Length: 520
Image 1 (cartoon, rainbow, N blue to C red):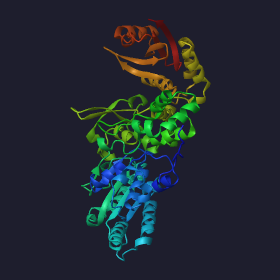
Image 2 (cartoon, helix red, strand yellow):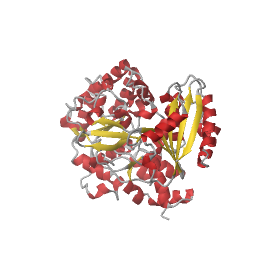
Image 3 (tube, rainbow, N blue to C red):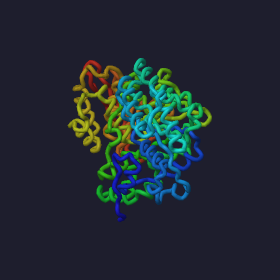
Image 4 (cartoon, rainbow, N blue to C red):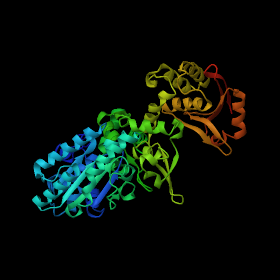
C-alpha cells in the first residue's frame, strides 16, 4: 500500500499545507483559468468548510510569486512569469456574531496590518479612504497592480439576515468599506471574493457591475470539494486504508463514503462533489460518521426555517427558479435558495424549459443532521441515538415484528410532551417521518402512486411496509385507502414481502390508538 500523506484537517493555508507535505487535491488548474480567462473581478459562493479559504490562500501564494510551492502541480506547466504582486487578503471570518461598533474595529485592525507595510495617506481617515490609500500606495511602491482577496465577505451579516436594523447597519459598513474597488480599477490586477451567499443577495458589491459570478458555472463545479475521479485516483490509498480499518472491501467503503458525503451539485450539469471536510476527516479518523453538520448549525438557518414556517417534511424535493438565488433577505419569498447556498440542499435536477432547479438533500450526513436539528420541535428532548426506544424499535423491525415495533412506538409517543407540535394529523405523520429517517433507513413520505400518495413507505431488507396514517379515524379506513389508491402497486415486482399497515392516532390519548397489519 502506498505511503499515506498527512491529512490537512483544519489547515486552510496553502503554504502550510504544502510545506507539511499534506494530502492536496490539485486545484491549481482552476487558479490559472480564473486568473487568465475568468475576468478581473471574480465571485464564488460555496458552503462553509468547502475549501473556499484554501482556494483564496492558493491564489494569494500564486500572486505572491511563490513558485516553489507549486512544483509538480498543474499550474507549474502553464505559468512562466511568476510575477510578484502586492496582495491585500481580508479574511472576514473573524467578524461573526458582531455589533456595528466591533465590525468597525475588525476592519480597522485588518487595515492597520497592511498600513504597517505600505503606510497611509494623511487624507485617509474612514475605512473606504484607507482601502483606497492602501491600494494606491502598494501600486506606487511595488510598481505592480494590486490583488485584493476578500474571503467570507458575508460572515458579519449571515447571523443577522432576519434582523432588519442590525442587517442594515452592518451592510452599510461593509458597502462603505468596499466602495472604492470599482474606481480603483486602474490599480488592480485581480479581485477575488468568496462567501456562502450570492453577492447580490446581501447587496454589498452593487457598484461592481462587472463582477463575474462563477458559482453556478459547469466548468467550475469542482473548483472546491472533491470529485469522484479525484477521490478514486489521488485518494485511492486512503480509501484502501479506511476499508482495511472498517473490515470492508474497497467498493463497499467507497459506497459508504458516497452515501454519506457525496451528492453536491453546483450547476446545471455539474459533476458530483464530495464534502472535502467530512471526507478528509473520515479518512483521518478511520470512521464514517457526521462531521460537517456536527461543526455547528448556523443560527441563521434555524431562523430562516422558522420565519417561513417550514415543516421538516417540506424541505426535500422543492423547486427554485434561478432568479430566486439573487434576491435580498428582505425580498426572499422562500428559504430554499439560502438552504442551497449554505449546503443543506443541493441541485438534484434542472428543467431547461422552465429554468427550474429541483433541490434536495445531498447525502445522509446532511439529511440526518438536518432532521436532528428540527426534531426537538416534535420529539421529546432526548438524544434518540442513545434512547432505548430506538434500539428496541429497530431490532423489532429487523426481526419483521412490525406489531412489536408499533407497540414500542405507542409507548414512546405517549411520553412526548404536549407542549410539542404533535396536535394534528400532519404532526403525527411528521413524527413517524423523523423517527424512521433518524434511524438512517430508506423511508419515503407521501410517495406518489398512480392515483394517490402513501403516507410512509418503509424499505427493509426483506419487506416493504406501506403505511397509511389516520387521525381520530380507524385503522380499517387506513387499510381501505391503501387498497383503493393502489399504494402497493409500485412495489409489486420488488420480490420483497409487501405488508400494508393501517394506523390511527388517538388525539385524546396523544398516541397510537389502534393499528392493523395485513400481508399482501
